[in-house]
Length: 269
Image (tube, rainbow, N blue to C red; front, top):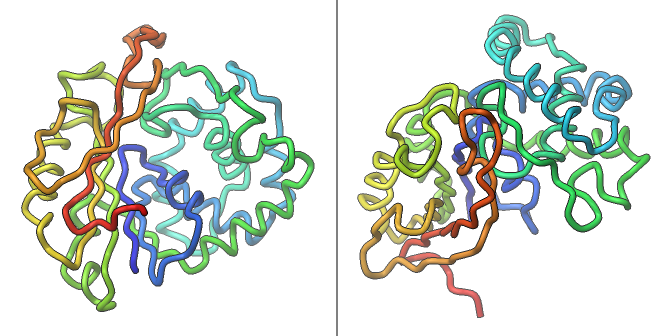
């Protein structure tokens, strides 16, 4: 089984790192370069990355660190591309902190977003009780975890060529998590915004009956009308980035998220 992750956030973090087991091949699309920077910095200077990743779960910390990450995105990608030795330990640490604290979509997309940080249960990512005080080791584990992942940097369709999809000869699982449709959320949510959801849905419909592919398309309830044979998994989410208004506050409304699975996805027992 091979896996490809393409999601609305420029940083394909949670789906990749939360996998219960490794596929034969993993491919992600890291359009802004932050994932490559985390890999380089964690390999070269994990102690410095850990220093910048530390901090309590706090709204203001999350907002300010995330704004700075977004402001540096363009320059970071250029520098990473120009010099294979370059890395920024500060940005890597801020990314790890924010990725562990962020709730909802929109992570890394644009400054000015003001979500409530992850405060449920015993914490998320590096903030969980059992992981506190273990940052240097965790960063080394993260560098090892990313070593075998194929990290592309480009448009989502660049990750879906015939060679990438079928070169290994194994079935391919693909997570498609495009931006919510513009009429279902704040139009100023993303730094680079377009009508991407319909195009992603069209690609999924075109390839959904290929028995070599197992597709998962994410969206809001009623956003995508999928044909017979596709199954839907629904779950409730309160607030989050889909409800973000121009002033940065969530509406507090409860929404229903859906993941549509293509006909050849395996059904749980």
